[in-house]
Length: 119
Image 1 (cartoon, one colour):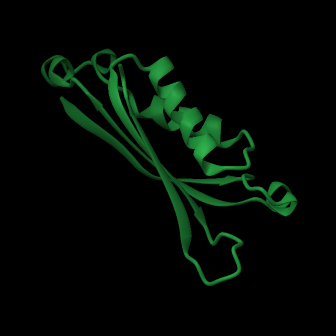
Image 2: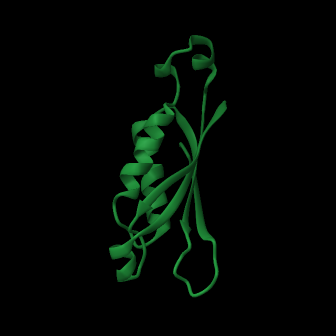
């Protein structure tokens, strides 16, 4: 097994329960960590034998562009799509952080983390 990380994906999106969040948007940071068998790609040096991190980034960007009230919902969509489109992935950990959330205090970010294993 091996691990592929795509970290600190910065995206401007429109998630949140408040109407204003859907209008003005906010900055987000997403981290993706996937586990897969990387032995074949380590030997072959071929992209088709691994999990393409460009594909992971594309999935994050597509799902972050679809408005949701909850970060948990966005993270679940990201994980679902990773498992649908990338059959080599055995486990995925997704962190979605909202930067400067409107929660009435001096808070740098709020983060949710979801993970799933292929069954």
